Length: 282
Image (tube, rainbow, N blue to C red; front, side):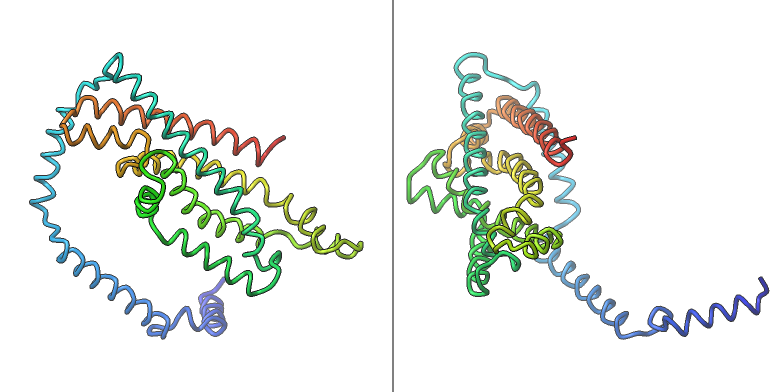
């Protein structure tokens, strides 16, 4: 191919897509301004937070000292070990109950929030704003609220997880409902099926594997969250962690952290297998 042909092709491409060859386009200027604004915000944030390299270096040295104090992990064989296991089981129970109760509540509400299954636009708007409100409040705030309502303990922790997960599940479930293939529902409609039958046989079977996959993932994630909310008195192993940090029992602290890591890893392995079995049953 001659150079003349290459130049002609290049000119043709430039003529067809001038926006990609413009040296100073409006889109590029906007992109540059946005990046500049983000860079300025980053610099201001670093200055406001007083992030300094000497403090980071000193912090890492202190972290190294703490890690040395945490070795070797002390399981506290006997009463302490049994209390660690009981607290870990309580944390798993909080995560399990909170996740699955939230899913049960969120599934019917997500039908109201999805465009293709809602009763009307008002119900869709109210359902979506409810989800935004529930997940817009951090789980620690919900835990503190429920501790004041029902008292200290795992019940408050489970209620906190339920509140946050109803909002998260509602958003994810409604988006999954809106993304389903329309052909099955159109086929049911053409054969005389009503709206409820279209949802029951045309929509729900498509999204159930997605729902189960998301529920299992949230159960794994909520096991970690249940550990954190235990620090503020919502039950589980978090309370033990906070007590060990206050009393500087670093070796016992490292064992509890190791116990949490092992538990989360096992739950992750189990949920991954279940997700694979649900999405690809054959």
